Image (cartoon, rainbow, N blue to C red; front, side):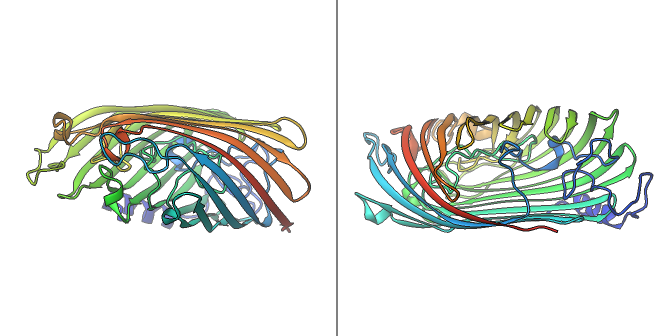
Length: 463
């Protein structure tokens, strides 16, 4: 990922700032923002980085099931029936159903010290299909996150997630939906049929609390989506994005934050004829109400400028003219973690990565996750996402090149603990997509029922 020069300079300046400031410099003070000892005491002087600029996703676990300082391992077996495995292969395509069997060994590590909090998860997978063995696949799921307090008032964070799969539904946590309070994400709701893909998402951030109620910081985010064999996903394309931002946050009271940020993004899609690129710049203002680290509510908005390069569409080697336009960006988010219940919801309206579509898009997206601990051994979850995308620039006027549309995804599941190490999950997923994309348009609906059995062991780590 290459950040623009102003963003890179901001990182260097922040890293060079002195560690002394107008707050208590005791070594036991929590790090500013979410970190190793973030706000264990709500009277702490440490500020939390507001969700609109943090680049992080909300935790969707009830506090009674959250764990830290552990080494965990295990294996998950899943069988699922899907009524639309192949997707569209022609104008008169009909959905093809199949039963799949998956196994995911996994290992996870979460360790917290006075200055460092880091997590590591790795889950390779193997998926076998009953009817079409030619689609059998070896999967890879890996993620790492680090938050390090460089000084009592400077915190560095970084995270990266990698995925290699043939089926986005085949995940170790089948009910997961990422809910973010910011604008750094892209269009992640264009779901191809069973087809190999590689996806990588990462972010890095640095925050500096230079006064009792003031903080500055910088973040960078990148995404990458690659289809190794585009012949089996006609109408979908590789894409990537790089985003950098700098922000200033003011805590006007113990629970109220206001933030102003500048954001620069480079959004790319790669149709077979060339490269479609859009560069955006935005000034965003946000307000966050955060009475504790378990609850936050945020709204953000501001002008966004898009510089659209000449765009290529299918069937033509002559690009459509580029253009420049002003639009508005905005959104809202809320997250709450109770002892038995957790809720996270978000909405955003931004120019974003196409996520497989032919070009960057004006995107309205919403996501939600609800988890409830029903009894000591029984839990339930409902997650969902909605995405409406409209290709911007010259392609919006070309019917054969436009892939405007929307997608709706929802999953409901029950999780039953069968013993100290064994658990069972039952669930149903519904996906509806309406895109002018060959791989999707003739078979837009997918229904999936799954049963998952997991064995897990955990070893506590601690001071």
